[in-house]
Amino acid sequence: MPALLQRHVSLIVFLLALAGWEAACHLLAVPEYILPAPSVVWHAALDLGLSRWLDHLGATLSVALAGYALAIALALPLAVAITRSALLSRIIMPWLVVIQSTPIVAIAPIIVVTLGAGVLPRVVITTLISFFPLVVSTALGLSSVPAELIELSRSLRATGTRQYWQIRMPFAVPYVFSALKVSITLSVVGAVVAEFVAAEKGLGYLILFSTSSFKVPVAFAALALLVLCSLTLYGLVQLAQRRLFPWSQRAQA
Image (cartoon, rainbow, N blue to C red; front, side):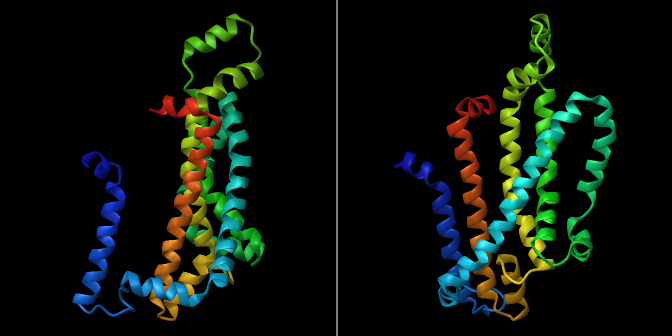
């Protein structure tokens, strides 16, 4: 029994927290527009209808995954470039720090005004939010190869390209997947931020619209779906690492 409890302790704590939340809302008579009980949130989700939920979820996921894919396509080659050239690293890294230090929420309206109110600005905002961890972690992994392995490859007259593909890239795989798991959750955050600024559908838009209309249970339901979506995407990336590079998880441990 202790082993079973240890295995499911997170789920048990979560269910107890929900039960405590439900009881507190009823005992203290908390108004729904301040803090709805989980049962009220559930009924509000059912009332909205499955088709509308799928419509909003599809809009958010499409932007999140598009921005995530674009971030990967830009970050990985850039990480290789800055590790191969010290000059490029000195030029690019300060700009990356500036981009990361700039609050995306503050420049999101500027991006929307510049690129229009379509899907493109939302994808760009998502890419900017999920981009930085990929570059930094991948570059760190490529640069953290033990010096003796590099010296061995040089003694065997390995070319620079072969050195990267057979030594540096495999060594960097755990770092890359750590960044991929962080970035996939940030991409959902980016999609929601973009929907706060300019969108006509999506879970972020639904939260904004519901709170402005004092439909707080719907907003809580959308928030719960966002959390579930982020956890699912995180799990999928983790599953891909386990299936494609099982040795990389042992290296992380």
